[in-house]
Length: 244
Image (cartoon, rainbow, N blue to C red; front, side):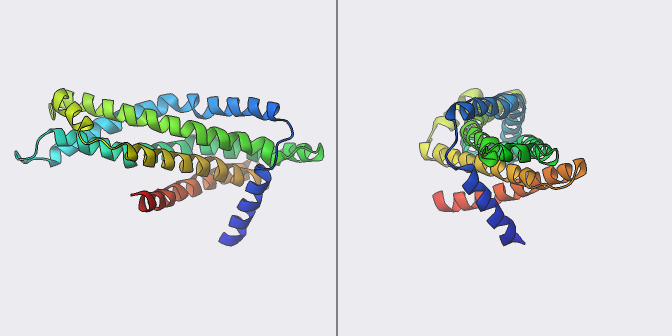
C-alpha cells in the first residue's frame, strides 16, 4: 500500500510541475497563498516562538548549577537549539496542523463537489492550478517564518532570562554572539525549505484524491496532518544526518 500511495504521489507531482498555461493567473494565486500561509500564520508563530525561547532559557539555567560554568553558556545553548532544531521543527509541526489541514479540506471539498472535474473538462491542468501555487508559497514563506521564529525565540530567551533572574541581559547577549556559525542558519533554512514542500504537497495529495462526502474530507485532512508530521520528523533526521 505504501508504494501504491507513493507512486500516486509522484505522479501527482509530475502533473503539478507541468508547464503552466498562463503564468499571470498562477502568479495571482501564488501571492494569495503566500498571504494565507505567511501572513496568516505570523501571530501564532510569534507567540509560540517567544514562549519556547523563554522556557528554554529557564530550563537550561536550571540544569547549569555549577559555578564553574559561565552563565553566557545559557545563551549559546539556547541559540544553537533554536536555530538547528526548535524553530524549524516546531514551526513546521504547527503549520502542518494549521496550513496542512486547510489545504486538505479546501482541495478535498473541491473534489467532492466536482469542481476539480469541471476544471479538467475545461482543459485546465487542475493539479498545477490548485497545488503548484501552494507549494511555491510554502517553500517561500515557511523559511521566512522560521527566520522570524529564530529571532523571536532568542528575544524570548532574553526576556525570560531577565525576568526570572537566570541570566543577565549582558551575559545572554554575549552568549548568543560568541562563537556563532552562519552554517547553522543554512541548515535551518534547508530544513524549512524541505518542511514547506512536505506540508503543502502531502496535504494537497490527501485532499486531491479524497472520495465520498464531508466526512471523508475531514478524515483526509486528519490523515494529511498526521502523515505530514511524521514526514517532517523523518526529513529532520535525514537533513541533520547529511548536513551536520
